[in-house]
Length: 72
Image 1 (tube, one colour):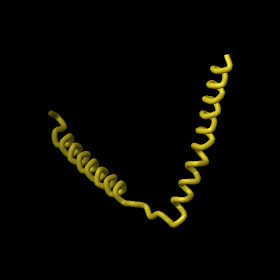
Image 2 (cartoon, one colour; image 1 turned 135 degrees about the vertical axis):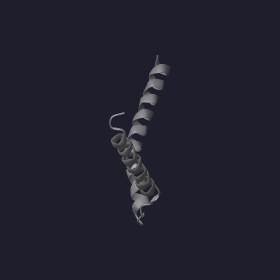
Image 3 (cartoon, helix red, strand yellow; image 1 turned 90 degrees about the vertical axis):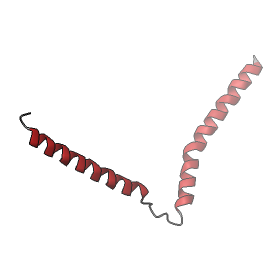
Image 4 (cartoon, helix red, strand yellow; image 1 turned 180 degrees about the vertical axis):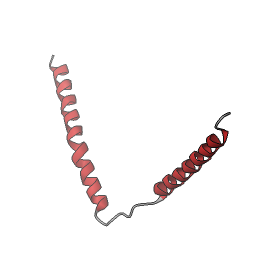
């Protein structure tokens, strides 16, 4: 091969860079973010604000379909 040394050096550099990147990503995944006192309540309220209207809409549609089914 014409560029054997260059290819070997590039492969070593790439593998070292990949190993460093994997190590950095593992550190960031295992590092926990601190949770403040009101964060859990805020997350619960935001989840309710998101899912409750959707659930009510689905329930109303189900009741209307059942009402039409029994009315006919």
